[in-house]
Length: 437
Figure 1 (cartoon, helix red, strand yellow):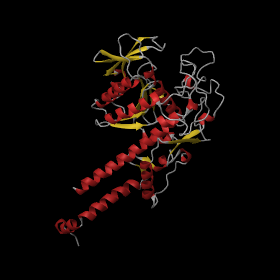
Figure 2: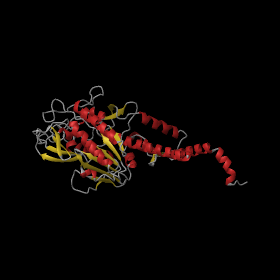
Figure 3: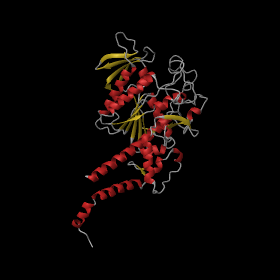
């Protein structure tokens, strides 16, 4: 017997809540049955750690799949991956200075004779959970068809080179730079249609070198704290992800301008110019950089602010014989973020909180604690030939590759996975609301 639509109305009216619930549960099950990573279409094996990455077969869905996924999501949400300790990792490193061509000479510590290798054999263990080792195949699937820009100074470039080396186990990129200028490089992973770029902007804002020598023989810079650095702000609108960072150039002498007027300086030693705290220029620079990003009408991407990476000079300043000769990480109870480093870090956090309320997507890539605990990870005197004439003879600012900052990609990949989870939950919430209307 056929039922007409009008005959079904009483049934539909009396059972509407059950139907809505059934439809909602069906949508959830349909999303989980393919064992795909939320919304972005990643097979579930991509969620495994690198220790499982050799087995890329996709198993059949089990009855416990949904419960396992929920438990995994709950575990991720309550764990602060940025707080923890370094623990031994005998399986590292995952590339070498002979297998990766992207290592800058000044970070090629093994080439220049560093005698110890233990600094490469640690991994970050967050308090209360595990942080998977970077899986290059997983990363490239997640960023397929997307683009990532590093915005900052030579430590930002150091981070980008680390990422290229980690990805080299799967694919090397081709150079698609639009200029021969090494400060503005672009690379493309052709099999994944993924673009990687670096934009050199050590002060984040418009800046000019007023004196190549200056009080500390490292130059004197004019910083226009309220003006965008158009070298990068006009180039990033189409990028899906931005990792922005800055820090060590703010230790150099600077003159601060606002509204084209001198408002003060940092260790400029100029007559009648007020010496201001380093954090003054640092705060204004991040504020202007974030303003530039938020002013881009067509920018739909996510901005990750990587927090300050402290240097580790001991027994003297960088230009007074200071060095970083340790060969093991600190434990978290053996050191603390103090002084100017703490001031810069807190300044970043304050400006970040302001920026993320303005409408665009901002995320905190908090590498400071993990980096603070690695005094053993710098080139020191192994970033150049012994008799080479270099400004930073003992380099305790940049990082050996392979080395500790490979973990920054562990953090970044985990954050990208959480972005997928967040988007998935938002989609479910939106669908549920529509069904209830």
